[in-house]
Length: 574
Image 1 (tube, rainbow, N blue to C red):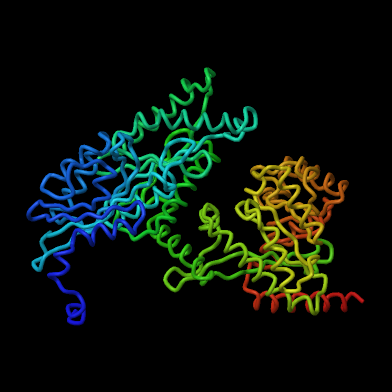
Image 2: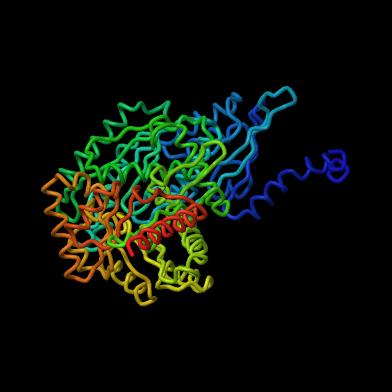
């Protein structure tokens, strides 16, 4: 501090203070600097702010009052409440987005970011910060006129910094793709615009953001919006969209789904963690055909508050070069000989505080995040690295790698995958790609094109989870798959369930006639394997009867022991 005093002359700073503020605003494009003396009520704003917004003066005692009159009427009270909290010393940071009227009479979106400066006794003394003019920045969605996802993230960060609790009303549209398919994307955008316009009539001090695709999130301060009123708002939206929405003179019935998330403002959660959870709530509501609003909070979201903390840490781990992630492998055996033919790579995450976390606890959630692409690439490279030593003694050994929905959505995924394989000099024919459940939601033509690419590279394709969800017999003919994997739930009680026997018989014989292999998951007893082997044309088995998923060192030790046992049995037969 003493060195700083020698460099900066306080009297000179005071003398040229207006010019310094103006210089800061001039060099920060579309950002206007201000400072307010809380004790005296005197404020100074940069000349650029005065000029752009048409304020009467750049300094004085009534600038804040004049500024409030420039803020959109339905957002003034939120601004006033935040400023009063700060001036009372209850919070130290101000971060608020709102619309303000410029000198031309047009409302532009602004973000006010400021910091409370306290005196020696800890009392509020000054409030200094910047007003960001977003007129030329990407904070408004051009289709709907709603705030963008970037604006949502900024708003959540501001609330979390100040420990202010809030709700997120997350909504999506069921089967919106059918509207685009039947009427075109331009008409689909008109539908989104009409829906947004009605939602804005109900905002009542809330903020509405357009997120991915047809999803929106409404942010509501907890102390202003009780849950009962939010549920009523959702019901109003649902009723209007289903019965009264019109576009170009045509009534378009829209069915929405969604959930309500409560964030208490006390947890140091990353905004991406919160956002991903909101997207997952929408997805669960859509898949489970939930019509009522699905209400969750910190303690309910994805299980409990501990789970939210885990998800937060998992996301940080992906950013930190996938630190804490590791792969386990479950053997796949030949149904006739029970010789090990390959293994499936399965992701796990481990932390000193939380222990080992299975994929079911985080994969669906993490798929909502752009970071999943990074994790997916790590899985591919690690699985290939772990398999290389096995190929020295078992050249026909195959490693199964799961492909997730967000990976295939990336235009550069095929190229990145190919580069990883070539960099490791790994034989493509030793890779089998498993299409997971959500992959089947992709456009069938795009999915077929991507699978043909991998097939031409020499890789095999498997259709995973067959018998569940969106899996259907027509996918066997629609996609260039080499194998279908029958889900374990499909063969539970197979020895006594006549319906499942009939269905499995149809599936396996159809696959055989089409030249596809069948791998049955969920083999838990020798008797189950014997029954399937004797009654159905199946090629491979996978399940706990052989081994649970295990790290690569344990897998290779298990495989050597298993093969030695089979060799010993064969010798005794001779």
